[in-house]
Length: 210
Length: 330
Image 1 (tube, rainbow over the protein chains, first blue to last red):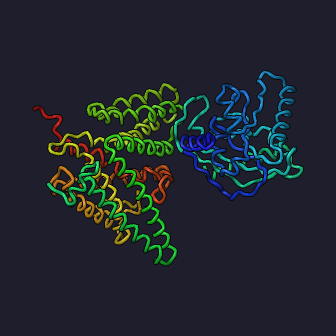
Image 2 (tube, rainbow over the protein chains, first blue to last red):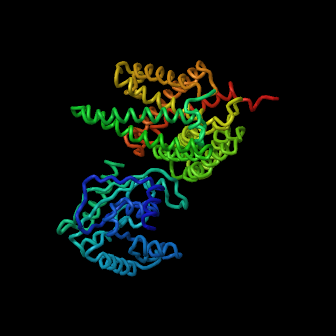
Image 3 (cartoon, rainbow over the protein chains, first blue to last red):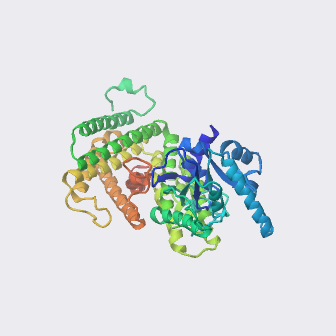
């Protein structure tokens, strides 16, 4: 019930309209990957999914933010069923970061199991919305572990104006969630080439539907 | 004066003339829906079917709008305030979505949505004419400009601030004049002001519909080919004249004589046309066909109320100037 109310609330605040450029159905496991500009992003993507798909889709979010306070803990655990990932402090050494990233990827793959889809933001951090930053390599490593998963590019339009980085209160403008054509990693595709291909898939959605 | 069905009407919580107006609108809607139903069964050809489907979508939306408006008016001042406040909110969001604002305007926009807009309707609710009439153009405009400049971003500053000001003007200030009609004090018309609001909305929307109908039937010569290619002289003249006639015909529900009612209805129609034209120019400028997707067949809420925006304040002030007595020294 709380989930239903939150979905409605998120839709009202973000005025989000889902646009499916190609029909997506079936039970395949998916990774929805989107550009990231606002704290509301994953709720908006999650809310835009059809109900059956939403029930089997888990957002990936930062543990530091979502473990703070009882409300956030409740929401992330019971409502969104989020996969919480520990973020390494920027002071950590390169080696520590590499190990932590590795562990996070393995956690995500394990939590996905054979049923769940996930929502990720491969830019790694929120941007200003002016451009889509290069993707971090997490998406690539996920695909190495789970090669059969369907990759769905998602472009979030206008979220950077609704709740920009650094602002606490949202302005209720209209936004759109554009779902692109599913893609997959090619065999023997190099990491950089794959990440750029994924990024440009989101970029194309922005050019054609933004 | 006495009305037909006087005893029965007396039991309803509304003014009698208002009930009759509402009944008339419902009768027209029922007739329209029947026509739409028959057309859907009989019309052949792809273009014809598309037109009928659009007509029926519009009719369905009209049912919802009439019911919502009827409830709002029937519940008196509070219902109307809430309804038009909500309309302002939805319109403002559609407008701002298309406006070229930047992160530096975020706070100014937040204030516009959550402080200035409710405050405007609150001032109308408490009947403070002196402040409601200047709050947005004086305090609101200055405040939003200052709030944006404090954020320290000068890129396109003039375009950004004037867009926010114009958004507040059109979506909040102008629209709020519709429920403000309830605060007018007209001798011999006490407690019946909801009929004025009904008169305004009826004439404005009817003018839109009739312009559309006359345009579809006879339209040939374009009025404003660059701004709004669907508007024709035939549609404009036919729509304005027939809506003016309807306005004159319901004079008994207003404080006006038949001639005055015709004049007011004509004024409302002309201002409605101007409002529609200006909003169409804004849409062209931003490269969109509709402001939103809220109402099926109509586009966004701003597409539906574009003609109300200019008609409401002008109708309010002309009525106030000629009929209101609150300013007069006893």
